[in-house]
Image (tube, rainbow, N blue to C red; front, side):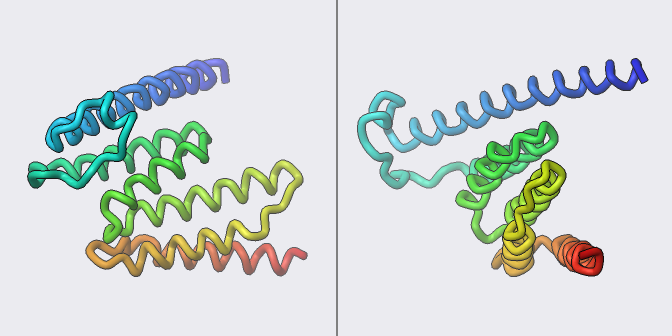
Length: 166
């Protein structure tokens, strides 16, 4: 038991360090994008950034998308659900046709529901929020996240169990 606690501590440190790394990488990418648009960091603090003058290199958007997904996962593992939601929403803004961030938002809604239910407060709307995100994940235009289908089935089974237990 003492060994498990020690390894859990190591894992928490690892996740915290990984969050710092991903934040750093995201900041560097944002600086790269600003420089590609001809803006400096100080200019963006005073004015809104305009559309790129030149197209960005092909890998920038997919890389940013993945970085935000992984950052959201790290926050979710540490139960920082609000930060996880923010990262997943940023991934969805960057690539709205991909279903993965919507699936992850549904997972966070279910985790928030479980956390609030165990604390004595019931958040009855969160399963509906999860259903919305799962459906949006499946209906994504460019890259639907097909795993969401089995997640919806589990959500319905969980709701059925909850209803029969009342």
